[in-house]
Image (cartoon, rainbow, N blue to C red; front, top):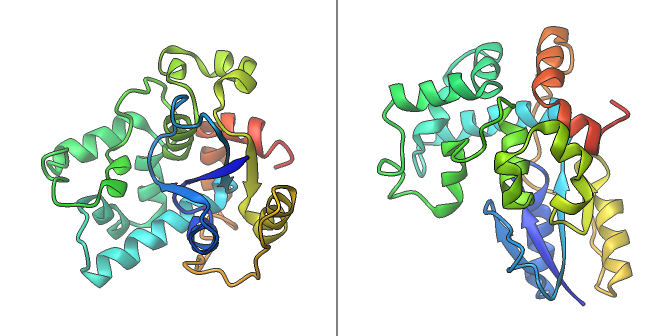
Length: 226
């Protein structure tokens, strides 16, 4: 059985993609999986606990903005203090207002790589959830979730999730090697790139409470111990 890797942003995907490239494992980056595209494959991805995911996204956007390379208008959010940045990306209406205020839409994204366009946010999902929950629902789940409540999605999660294997970023090398051995691919040595500089959420209880509230679905499904 062939493997297919879905690269979720800020979850260690570059590390996995580099190994997939060497061993001819199919991979797609920052785009949706569909029921048709997964036929004939065992699909896997890596997730990350929401607390550190937002901090990683914040510093990544800050670095991209400072570098001036491949300018992306969404990265201007990282000019804000972290708690203000978080207040926007955790709430659908505030994020949409930010995009509208700064005239960020598909036209302004025409010169950007396709993988950057997921940052337009909430194109079809009606739920008021954090940006990370949106990202996972949009990229990894069936189209049926667009018209469902979080309670309904949680109840039917096994049917709606289009992924066969979930790796955790916190133990990525071990999880990835276990999967590779199962499908008889060469294992990998841990030489990760693009690792986060700082878990800015770690000591901020207010930020953690807000993330837990807005990304409660992810905690229940992927990180029930946190």
